[in-house]
Length: 345
Image (tube, rainbow, N blue to C red; front, side):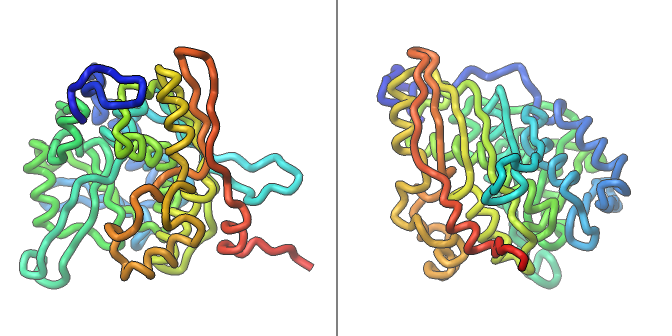
């Protein structure tokens, strides 16, 4: 973003003020809970020789919905509330919904939850198979390796950190060492949480990114992030998937075709613009299941229209006028067709 003056059209006016908040300090009690309640949450914990804690939330350990909710709150740096509810409608298009809300949307979603830290290792470095994962969660703000942190004007300083990896294998020592080094932590002060998307906890924590997806799309549109002061969202929790590609498709579909977000912004012109431009229906590739779209581009994310990565439906309220503007719609028919919601004879 640039540092030009504020503009009602949504032109960035510089990074929001740095809050006196530490996402790693705020999430530390949640990390401790995940470790302390590992048996109830059906996750497994181990330590490396150097003392780094590894939490398996879906590779060998089965994990759980409750673990996924807790991991999602950790991802948001302790600045978000994440719950589930059963839909009360007589004939809901899907029974269970993930609800998310935050009063610190920029820091919670982009300063912590966003999966923006690229971590990789070659076959030579691992002694076998190459490794790649995107890191999300509060430890990103300790390392500050992404340009996004300069734009946000935010960095964290704390003696503990937690990072979430959406991958189906444990990270190799070379990656763990890099995270420890880049975060400036003692090895025993780092916790790495591994949540494959096809695992129950992994599915939950990905769908819980419904608000983060809206914030990231807001950023892509060039809107001053300081405009967004409150955010809430919901998306259906899809059924289990037998493999990673199907799980990726279902979790993305949950947000792109079933996600609903309510933002509160400062200016009415920004509210109008976001209501019109934010929904996923603006994208060229809208209207097909995500797994099908992904395959059609030879599994290259960068070929997919970036406008697709957005919630299906948005409401945007303006502090300036008190008006609320609406855009997009939930595509329940697509989700039901993909997820196999059928009546029982």
